[in-house]
Length: 118
Figure 1 (cartoon, one colour):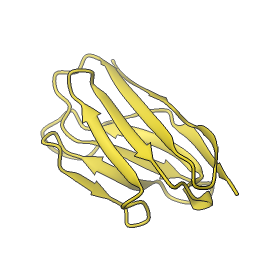
Figure 2 (cartoon, rainbow, N blue to C red):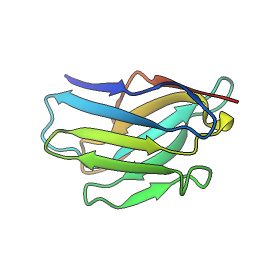
Figure 3 (cartoon, rainbow, N blue to C red):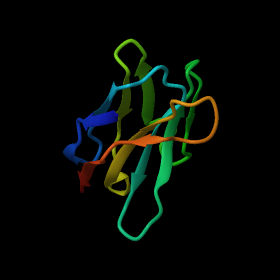
């Protein structure tokens, strides 16, 4: 069984920073792709940032230049450094991983809330 434990969310003022972490545990042979998603009420979950096993990163246009995704492979941990936060960044953030050689994410965290107050 694989579990993803997210931490680092909370309440922050506009312009502030947060650093989200997500640690995987369980029966994992290898983690390929890892990503952060976010979701607000009434909206679909959107991908915020993505990182491959080789460290190649991609970002949603709305966060590019403000957010940085990184991973620590030996620790099986994913990070999301969020700077210059805006009210529109308020959402529940989910980490996700792909442990297969194909397809999309196959394991998801339970989500962590980030609230940016103006």
